[in-house]
Length: 282
Ligand SMILES: [Fe+2]
Image (cartoon, rainbow, N blue to C red):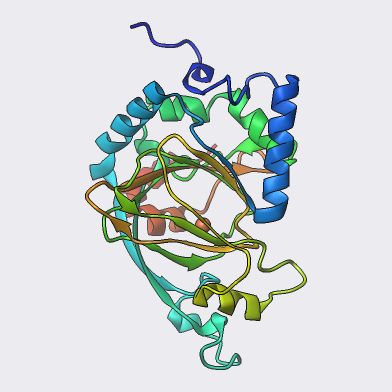
């Protein structure tokens, strides 16, 4: 079978005609994404990939599984570590609750150019659609050679604890379907720039927040997310299939790169030698 000429062929264009932003069906899709982002902080496009593409993306991602850099972190939902604990808040306050997260990540530089995931990420058609959905224009793909495109790896038993994202927005593409668990739980828009709403965050931790949404992970689903105001977590993965999620990073400014020391901390010692050669400089 001849391989498709463009990543658009891997998308269910009948349902999601993202390659043509002027198509009335695409305008309706963009309006739906914006409404979901405004009301629940994430927009979900189920079965975004065709079944054939799902199989290919799944297989390619599994082939990278042994390149995962594993980390264990203990931190608050605000990404503070225990040594940064702010004791001016009362005990038990969300600012003083720390959670353990086990997780792994495959860095951008380990994802080959011929992988369909890489080609989809680098396709301008997807960037243009995401920019429309997020209403961020212009929007650039992240330029960091380690961070731009990642695969998040949650092995059976792993979970991602409650946290607010540092970045404004992110795009997730589910690459595998775990046998059980691995749901994303999100307390939608629990805080704002003006109001930290700690009572609401405490309710989210207890499971009583009124706008607590839960979505299961299914291969081929695309999720556009604004996680900066919505505390969220991933529940423990069950069964034998790891939960692999592509994280597609974008930014408002071009040529965005991170500090070398942060990349070494994030992706491990192998990165130290690479950055010393100027690998990640423009
Ligand atoms: Fe997150």
